[in-house]
Length: 281
Length: 179
Image (cartoon, rainbow over all chains, first blue to last red; front, side):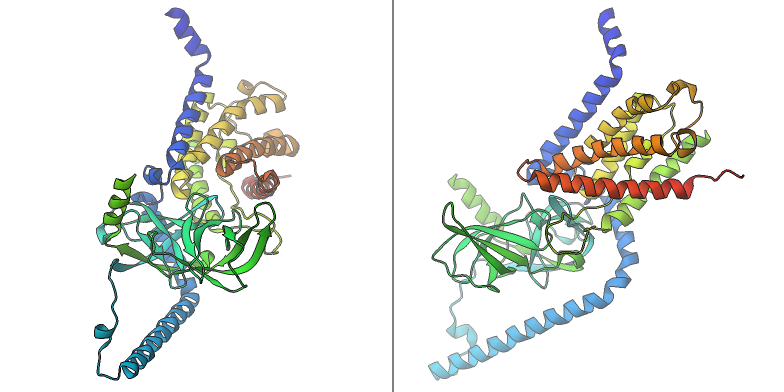
């Protein structure tokens, strides 16, 4: 016993060092799965409050750029409305009866989306996994696994929530691939090319698919995102000789460097869908 | 008593500067769009480097752990900064012993600085520990040896930036001796 105590006294520093490093490694290992971020993350209330304060200061300087992005988004929505109206008119003339849109189009509502706005109070692009902190939390109805989009395109997914803040893992993350599809419906995962905050890669697309530069890549409806949200645009297509597959490089639709406002999208059927899929496994 | 309060204040200032200003800067050397990694300049290891000589190793380890964790909380990287900082705190005493002419206990009520160490030993001390800190941090963050070149570039660029920040801190906050 005496020897043991002497041993501890002699190597106390080394033992303390190893213990602390093991604690750190446990923390790192816990967060390797996306679910474990809760414990130490920017959604905790003190960190969130500090970021909020900081954001209030820099907020003013970004107003001009934000106005532009809002205008662009408005324009896009207006165009969509105009397109919709014309389409309805065409349908009416074909049928040649006074139908309303709701009579003619048979839409199956299998997903119901609720949009909530949120402001980005912290944002990073330089790590291997990048997180965004937003100023909405469980008090505003934000839950885990909700999709986050901006006016321009897909942003990420909520991973941890406190009362007034939430952490979002962005598309620019190694451990968060997203399900994407090309214009002709070919789908596959899109991952981030580490270190380049505006480049995403879609691997292993078969050679038959014809892809041109500027083609848009959008979300599918079998991930947590709503369908047809723009992820990015193709800027380079590469043929991999080894397995004769194509690798597509995308520019992200969202500029992650000046993200200001985002929408948190709740899919009211997501839980049911996930439960069902879980039951099959 | 004065040194404790001084270090306490320094802790808050350095963490605040790191979190509120430097974390928002994603540096990218040469503005060519691709090819060079982007990184954040780090200055918080400086706090551990400037702690007084008398702090025992156990104390250094605990302080390093707390500092690392508080940075982690802001950066959403639980454990990674803490791991690197604890490693830095553990090696600090050995590096100082190797660089200083006298034994550490001979320096009463002093902290590592340019004044009692001179520029070259101080910069060696800072550079050595920061290379180790950054290597540990980026290896764990990237956690793959697929692109070693990218990793090494990131470590080198980040180290140089941190050292520049440290030099400017030292130049700003060292009292000039009156001639």
